[in-house]
Length: 376
Image (cartoon, rainbow, N blue to C red; front, side, top):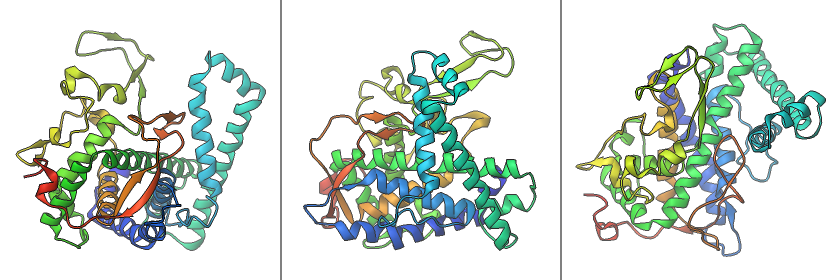
């Protein structure tokens, strides 16, 4: 059902409308309010987490938590998600799984906190469903309303709410954070993105349609290159349903857990060449046109029949945000500048300490002189 709905032109148009509204009415005004102030460092990671939470709630459930309004406390829903994600990831850091399993059995320590967070999430998810049912869903555009028209199982609907939040919130915020960290360290790539935007949509103009974005090949390449180096899900696992044999002859027994590591795979010289540690969007271009690598080589969106259902939606959101901000602002990283970010425990990649930046006004129109050979 998700695959069918997310492929519809109407739902993509609705998503574009939601993202554009959140950018124009909240994200840009927020950054404008601190632009040029030497005394105000803003945590861009926190801003993106709030922004993406608002987007996924409006798009998926038709509700607006207003997390991006920094004068308001972050919602209890979002706070519980953050804590549950952190505590779940910390299980993997224990000496033995027996440690957290015993704590869970006794309901003590972090396992008690995790259970409380999950209870809060489930209750709030149920409240989302109740509110949607109370105010009607038959004429609504959001995904939950479309599901409710044909699904009556309350637990199933609740799990849909939780799944969409997990899939659509932290991953987008993670990619945006690493993308802007990389762009701040690579001004030539930033200039190339802006030159391309001027060529495709015109100077001082905004993207007005989903179709327009398909012509922004260098921006698309820069987003993919960012995810190659800093994927939002750094490692993932699958369990083998039946006995199987991998292409190299390795036997995998039923029930075996198979883990792959996109973060490490993006840094393997055999796959990406001697410049694998460099941020180089050009590696994704063939004669200026974006070239899609084999998804099994680049499994950020997974591959095969399990490919991410929200891939196109996520890319649309990432590119609109990136371009809207780059055309107006230049992000200056707070000292000390590091050669690579440190990450905190979590189900998605999160910069330890956030991404502190000074927000500057963007310089004048980008020119080919600024870009070298980045774009033709």
